[in-house]
Image 1 (cartoon, rainbow, N blue to C red):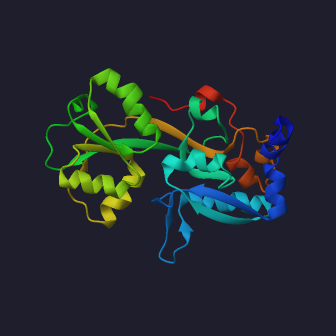
Image 2 (cartoon, rainbow, N blue to C red):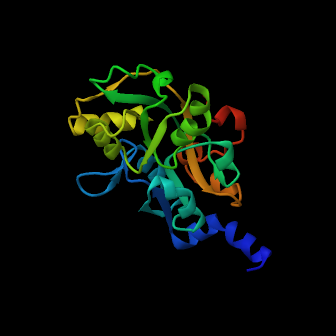
Length: 246
């Protein structure tokens, strides 16, 4: 494939979506309350609602594609879907590969331990412990590149979903897990996981945005016809303000 033909293929997303009459949106589909299958087996949640509003603004139908978070960037690059709306934090490294909208939400990441655990009162107690975290997430990057050098070595165990990490926490296979507070709460309540409690202050303050592959023209973000959709797709240009704040 020539460089010019490759560039053409990577800069046609808006026209491609409009010609197809449908936009394919990648999300986990297992991350309440942001994206999940409801009782009617329909994609629901905050991310899903934002994606539907964007599709409405583009005057196209929407198709949701479920994807584990660890494969989200690869799926986007492989054209498995046209954009990602799945609580993806804006980081400098990710911005080298993808275009982000302005943040549409900020999240709090919390430490969760068993109610009987008295050893972990803060992240300073992590050394020597086994800590669970979502695979491929900004939380994992934070643990490996920021927290561990700061507080000392601990073992990191990665998971593709929240409930498995909480089950391992209950079974004693990990000592703590970190995740988005609002994603943890529905799982704890729905599954009556009384063993889990919040022990720490906010660790990371993260900003999440809508994502399309790098190389797409900026007019993709300006294309929606409704003001509400344009607000969600506003181009992310103020780099430092929108990075994760530690």
